[in-house]
Image (cartoon, rainbow, N blue to C red):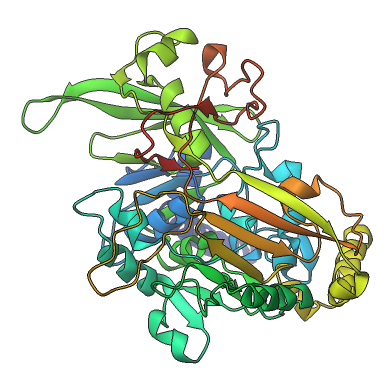
Length: 517
């Protein structure tokens, strides 16, 4: 009897254990299913790329997470549009908000620090290997993470010269105001707005050299601009405004793309270290029976060099925001461009012949003028730059100097050379002539402009730099591919040819306009 009771007790225990095992297994499976569903919802691109599961379709695939890609992704994934968007970026994170970890201080990366912009421009691991003097960022945020952060709007004449019926100055101006959060006061605020995602602000530090520059321009009779973004006050000398928020770079990726990823993870996905090398194209028929060519796949390699392919559904649209150089290069390598350009490098007949692809690019040629000055004129800058130079040798800072929120310069001027300009409209009767500037001067108390600096951090304080840039150039440039669809190659003895940079192309039509460089 005692044995029977023992066996019965053992059976009961085993029954309980079996039931709990079954229940635990069911619970674990349910948790895995829930986790999988959540992961598919939150990280569809990553799962699709690594495990080939959860490969749902997207409404848009954006190639390039630079300033333009960040703006487009922010808009399309917003509640107003509610599109499903995948962003493919060849580089990795940059600013802290994007997941960057190249820290200068505590939780700020070198990309966050305004004073570090020139230093960042020469960190090769974060840039495309274009050769020559090209400095093109290969990170989330694109060239918006290493530029000088100037906030200078386009002029009405710039927009009107494009002669586009649905791209008028009023529309552009409204968008400027919608994006802006102006940190300022006084009478100039009426030309700005508050509440937008991107902060614009005056320099937190006004260097002595800049003050002397403005005194000199005043004595020469040059007009003083209270704000370069005020209508009819572009021509003159004054202080710049910057995209800097409380001493930190306020780029498009940090203010638009990253918040959109956090707010709409079920609609917006970002895949970093995903290099796109080719667009697969196929001929099909449009809604009204017309022949069209669509992108049916995107191919490339990941950070380990492994090939990958993203299938593009018929309803999905592909948007190229890879920059002024890489966008036309990708198009041409995929069979879209000028016929002779593709035949010359062995790419065969174009799938789509678009003669302007890779042509009519424009840039702002600039020269740097170096002047010797008495050290007291830049004495206010000495301690700032010495401390920054020491950081590059010592590592992460224990304290963050407020002066690091200053980009290293504060003043400049926009001038009209006096050469006839077709974009300068004739004045109405009784009104003064409004000049459209064609030259821009920027005054650097220390030689930090990246193309002039040439990687040197050995800074002396008895030389200053003034850059003079042409901002209304007539010269056009074009992309030339190497054999087998590589990047551009230098030709002839033209000194402005560099591997990966547009080659010089003279134009007889000085009134034509090209894409920005």
